[in-house]
Image 1 (tube, rainbow, N blue to C red):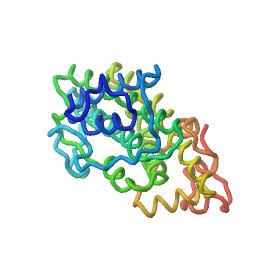
Image 2 (spheres, rainbow, N blue to C red):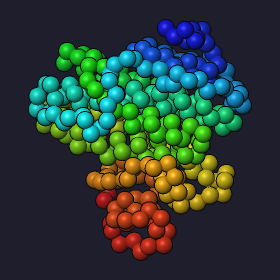
Image 3 (cartoon, helix red, strand yellow):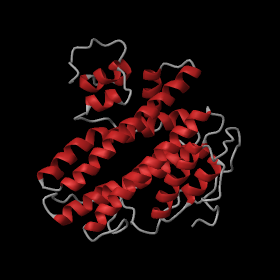
Length: 291
């Protein structure tokens, strides 16, 4: 249990999100995030949207392992072997652990947003926690636990870059980094099924379904903020992607999932063939969008 807060007794949404973010034990973080969200839904919480909460220095809370290394040092292994699938499940668990932290960070960090913003991102935190728990349980069936293999810190690095800008956070975490999961999940799921690992493939089905909703939430709040600022979302996204050094988008893309997640037709056309996202509104559209 965290020293900062007794999660079972806490009621205030944003301080609880910060306390959970600081929690170092992954299982405690995941379980407490899910239980607190249930209480939020039941009306057993309070929400101060205005409070400006001091930023602690110990973020995010995470265990000593896994060792964090450069992405280039992580080796791929065949999914045909149990060892290879264990490494994959660990990598997915690490993504989901980071995703819990990212959602909790959005809840506590950004004041003066509509109440629905905080409910939405606590919902995301709870669902990411469930994904982490599912993957951890499956990883245990391979004789491993979270922390057994190295991992990288790319997701949290973008959170650090966008810590002072809620518009950039919405643009570059859910609708950029997390949206890449929409593209990656189907081929990974197919390879797991081809290897006969239908239990792991079923977890990927759950994750993809929920992640569509998470990216949709990101798209909603990105466009909400653009509307409030009277800013064009297409050009604003391009500007923010350049300013914060977002990774370049590369296919193949899951157009159906991206459409369900709230990307508009101009954005999908850009992914389908345009080289320059700044040209979305003016360039002729000739490439068909797969359906």
